[in-house]
Length: 153
Image (cartoon, rainbow, N blue to C red; front, top):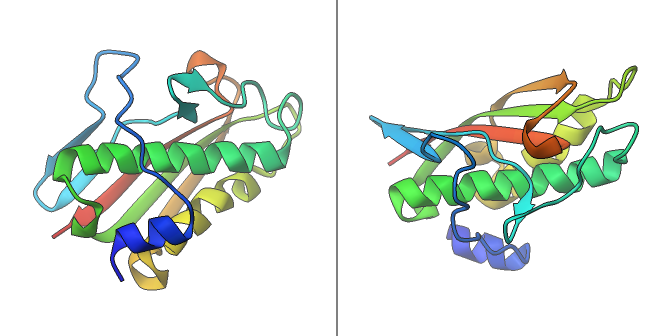
């Protein structure tokens, strides 16, 4: 099954690449690997779910934010390779969760992004290594930020 078919089934549209909010490129390819820059849960240039998970943002909304950020990371991958069908393997997802003091369910928040990647790319190609980090602040007040490493054909 093509990636576009999975995206349609999941009712996901890969957005146009968001303009970087700093001096960097959204993604870069070296050999067969594509590394994305950190991606926020932006929709149409607007930040979704601002604040700390466990205080200002619920776990469920943190999960929604993680999915949006992963979709934006896929937009950056598509920008580099032109077609998500060229993704051979999702290698690693790194997730940052802006956390309230005492909040320790960062993995639960980032599971939503991991699950989305396996739904899009399949159980084998979408399975990946992951690091999830709790932090006290993220750019623009975002509750999550993610970056991806993918192997391409």
